[in-house]
Length: 164
Image (tube, rainbow, N blue to C red; front, side, top):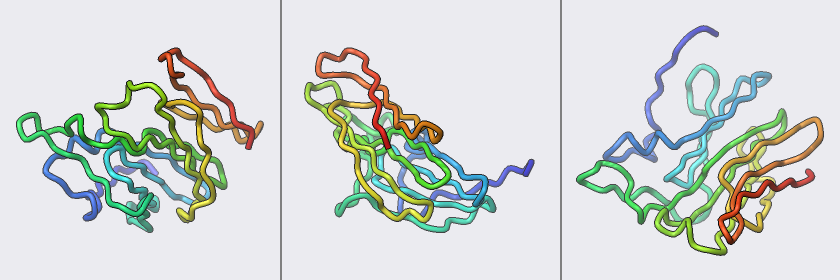
């Protein structure tokens, strides 16, 4: 579209610092002109149209999660919960890699991740429980594979593949 559209933060995640937005991730679906955004320090997903208007917002889980801001550094502190770390999509679905652990605990053993699946109206579909902590995901629509990169309990790098 060759345009830049500046959009405000949604009211539900307004906070005292903009640095929390640096961890947000997005994916898009050109055929329906939609953009999905996952948030690193809030348990929220947002759906936008290509015109920059918010279409829908969903909260993952019952309780609202938001960052704990360090007043001196003006950034989330180590007590803040890391929520959604990555987002990918296919023509039909959105895949959100979620951790939901305090940042101070992410290097402890036996940490696991989840991948939440939504349709393009942000309706929940299913959850994939991973055996380890994952950092990033990719989805191959042609082979119907969901691929994740993470660490096992010994902090060794792993690549996992889930057949969809």
